[in-house]
Length: 102
Image (cartoon, rainbow, N blue to C red; front, side, top):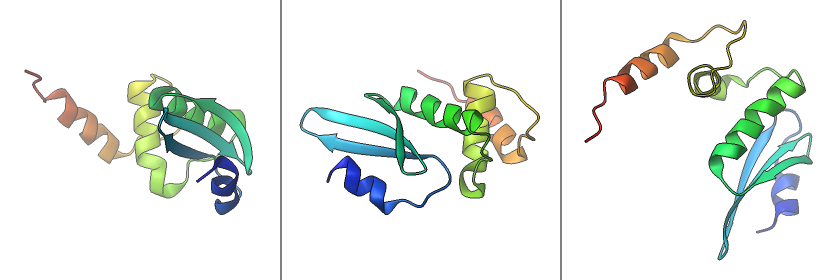
């Protein structure tokens, strides 16, 4: 499996996050319109790059990912904008804050 073949499989439009695994570890790639936008070696940076690409290109989050991306944007990254936070994201935050870590 290589990056070019994975990019060829995706639809144009929304940014995509691709993870490739090898003996050396994992590599993460953000692709927009089948063009490589960013590359990183960890998932945290990759998700930040993914969300940043939506902002940079003024692309609306796709419906299947809307809730999780809004949750990450608002509650993890602290980036608050005009987008409405779904109740399910607020409930998730409430549930997470009740977890006790031993």
